[in-house]
Amino acid sequence: MDSLKKEIIEALKVQREIFGDELFNDKGNYIVKRKTEVVPESFQSAGSLEELNNLICNCMKCSLGDTRKNLVFGTGNPHADVLVIGEGPGADEDEQGLPFVGRAGKLLNDILKAIKFEREEVYIANVVKCRPPGNRTPYPEEMECCMPYLKKQIELINPKLILCLGLTATQALLSKKEALGKMRGQIFDLERRKVMVTYHPAALLRNPDWKRGCWEDVKAFRKLYDELIKPSAE
Image (cartoon, rainbow, N blue to C red):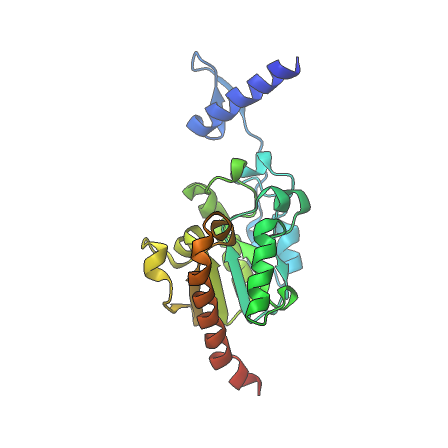
């Protein structure tokens, strides 16, 4: 019985990938529509991160809501000068409801410490708030659903600098199609904020040779921080 149930669930997932919210049997007859919970547009008027989280925590705007255990909103200093943006939650993050808590998260903590940032000092978020099955790259429509939430987070936190981790986060935030290698080392402007990019920690775990390049990127990011933030704080 369990194996049959599993086969049925997998078949429905395949149909959903093809037909979206509406699922059909092999004769083309409509059989079920995925239950969705519409996030009220009032989320745009949220006055704090906590209020925003409460408004979007039950979001079912895309199919990622069907498979998540926890929506991973973000964590850190709500008034941080530095915002770190990744791609999306992994298995550990989905389990705990917090971003970057697995192996990649430990490496991120080490990277931040190496440039004299504590994790609690910055704010950490992702482009999508729910784990893509199998840790695959989020689909464009999934990112489109989540980007308004990230943009609202940016508005509420009001960081002066943003560090994008990996190609997906970089392209989503900056609306650029260039390869990561062409964007590393550059400083981009995003609504009066400075943005720099580097490798995603998960990519560094798979490709240790990239760590040297990442180190150069984050040193440049820290230098930019010291130039922009410290003078105004003194």
